[in-house]
Length: 166
Image: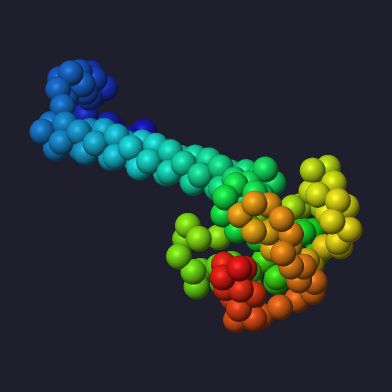
């Protein structure tokens, strides 16, 4: 049988002496871990808050863009009869926004009548038009022009300019 080098009593005595004390390095490491945790929580809170803000802002913009009561508000308005599942409608929307970006922001209103909603479908039926269509209204809410089908941004810009000039 092998003889132990240190007796169990000596080991217990040494561990009892060091158990109550912590070294400066351990204390510094604990502070660093605590500060990292605080920093990570702060970054997480900023990310969650920022994401919430962006989501709320996008939702408010979408509601504003789909507000059909804006037709006849004193400014010329372009209403797109839109089906979100139609690729031609999405392309027309992109080109319409490009054309609108060529004007000063407050000159024209842009409204989307989504035919997947009751209000959008009723609006499209009132004017007897299918999706992939733009309706151009003057400031009084009177229909000036109907543009059916896909159009390029520069062609749309010309139609929008004519609406402003009338």
